[in-house]
Amino acid sequence: MRWKLLGYFIFVSLVTNGASLFAVTLLYFFGAIFVNQGIDVSNELMIVNEGFLVYTPFLFAIALTLLLFWDAYRVLFMANPRITKRVKMIIVHVPSISAMIAMAAWLFSVAQLIGYFWYYDLPYNTFVYLSIFEQLITALAAYAITYFVLDFANKDYFIARLLPQNRLEYLKRGAELSLGRKMVIYYSAVGLFPLATFGGMVYYLYATQSTQFSTQQYTMLALFIGMLVVIGIVLTRLVTMGFSTSLAKLQKATEAIKHGDFAISLRVTSIDELGNLMERINRMARHIALLNSEIVDTQKEVVLTMGAIGESRSQETGNHVRRVARYSYLLAKAYGLDEEAALRLQEASPMHDIGKVAIPDTILNKPAKLTPEEFEVMKRHASLGYEMLAYSHRPLLQTAAIVAHTHHEKWDGSGYPQGLIGEAIPIEGRITAVVDVFDALGSDRVYKKAWSDAEIFAFFREQSGRHFDPKLIELFFVQWEEIATIRAQLADTF
Image 1 (cartoon, rainbow, N blue to C red):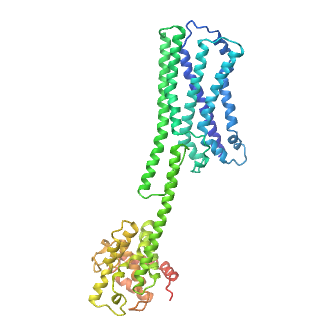
Image 2 (image 1 turned 90 degrees about the vertical axis):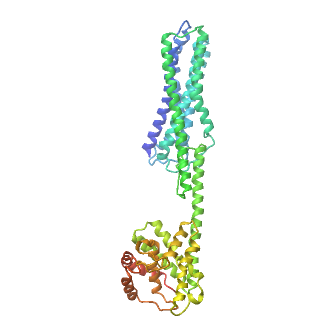
Image 3 (image 1 turned 180 degrees about the horizontal axis):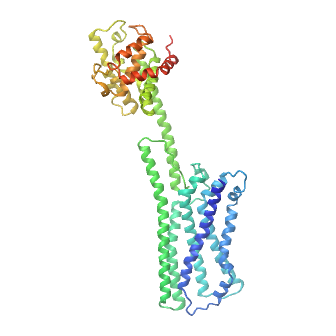
């Protein structure tokens, strides 16, 4: 962390002073346009001889940087450097602080120049006014360049690496720049800066009573205008990238929420309106995820309860549907279904016999073998269960509808209600068929006593490829120890 922080503040210092140096370089072009043509240069020579008037803005900027960033610099000398809340605050606000440092340095230079002429009681002339004017332009340009370069670097690189904590909202201090203020800075840099420069040129022509520039001045003017165009393009690119990147993230997040993905977490890298919007979307996604989780949990409880109600009508225990659910998940995973599909089957399988609520008790609880007519009525429970659930668009209830409709289909096509064959039977129905029959055979019912494990095993081997999917029967025996454990954990108690 020490070296990351050191590298960051070295970069910040280079940008802050580099922006000023770049602005000064531009104004050297500007100054070259005003090659003296009959203007008194005595004051100009005195200023040049006093070199501190040129260097002090940079020294002043360094001093301000040390003062305002001291809390961050102290961390570099700690045995175990740690980014405190104060340091985080500095990092987040580095663009605006550094931009103000750059501007303050050049405003200090202007004050220094005025003080110099006042102290030595020197007369003002065109050169002096232009010098003051140039440094004010430098302050404006240095502010804009520093801010937008550091703002872009913070958003796209440094904050993600220095502040793993994704929430910046609590770091606000009331001095953050709004989008409106940023646009004012942008306009000042790409609009007022060239306009002010043009005003300086007009003033020069007026002060010297000139009607045109020399050839050399035209050359320097062309170079200067070219530099202004480059600055405008670069700043415009930085500004638009800052907006477009954030807006693209917001669009992607809202699309994810629209399609039911609430596990989004936008990295907030600014504390302007876009940053606030990102933080609000993060909170909204977390809140929707919580509400969705509650809805899903309620669905699960309702499905389990309805499944138990369906089974209780045939005098079976609620643990039957719980065991069927656990067995279904185990076989689904062994078969190769993904976690989401396996969990959905576990949650839906308790509803496999929900259609029994529409079957008369005289048939449902008859202690003897059903007549052919009664069996036809009993078979209707598969279609009735499907009709109860099929109109829901919820994935859980859609799966429950499939299970209810197909858990009595047989691999060889002799099942009901549709007579489906082999893999035409949905895997959810094939798995539920195996685990439902296993649990039914191993439990006491009004019309029979529980079978032994050996009898069940023999029946499964006999019905593999006839009643049941052969692959599922193989997996049943592979998973037998875990199945037996589940059965023991959820044994019926009377």
